[in-house]
Length: 390
Image 1 (cartoon, one colour):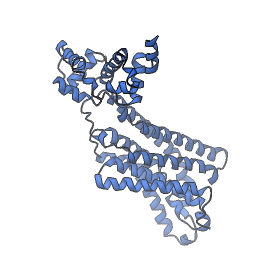
Image 2 (image 1 turned 90 degrees about the vertical axis):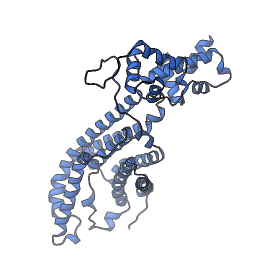
Image 3 (image 1 turned 180 degrees about the horizontal axis):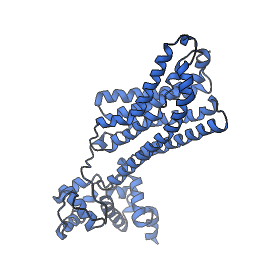
Image 4 (image 1 turned 120 degrees about the horizontal axis):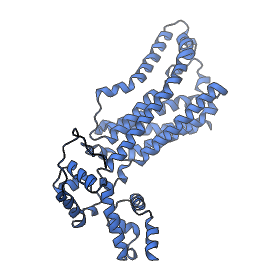
């Protein structure tokens, strides 16, 4: 009987319904605020929920109760649409003033081709005599199941792998870029996005291994494939919660209108024109840090310091990179670490916690403070304090 609520169907049903709630929330917010990242994430969740629904209704007895169901025509390979959506979602929240370009539609060419193909064979089969009395028509059996599904199995996995590689590259390039612009990057690092990409990659690998085992070694039934669907549903819910409640709109306002050069590599003549750095430029920057203590501003970024120094961002970046041989993030945080050390010498740790002192010195998160301090001194803050007490 349908619906059959059992230990296989009920967990998936609950998770899928929760995922669909976040789809509705994200799409509603998109239509109100026109933040395109909400649209991309909403579509990502919609595709994964759609895939899970197809399995969930199977565990609920749909295929047994409705022997002539035509749902097999619409079990579409979602990976060819999901992978480009994930890539564009990451791009939309890590790119300044992201706009959807017409050329981006090409990312979905394969997905649209698959959808048109499925509707095409459905339309043809639906016109054949006796279609209402059977589950699958002639093209579904003799073309799709005999050839196309096998071909798609060889296409979908490499397609998703390529997009995953590009998405990870996009994300890590963003991570490298923000240290050139911001002194405190913790809130901009998007650690949950990295977790999502890693989890999705693991699920992708799990799915590939499962398909290989199912096609080469042994037949895998619904129950054997249940675990992958459960994990996908859990990840979908996690992404929905984090994506909806994390404000990523501020990232669209980040101004990455020029790319600072890599430290130690001379700029080519084709790069943006920057005034040659002088000793005066270096002294201006040193004065801002040592006299005016600009580093105490926890939100200090390259643009702010450039305005204070009466320089362009490119000129300031060149001054820091070439004059101090550091990127902006390391340059500012070294002053903060030295200020922290000085406050320890003044016994400030007897009045404030170590985190309290760090915040007085311009850090805005414990994670950033611990990481930066370890990088610069090779000690954790606690280890350093103990070493000074000996």
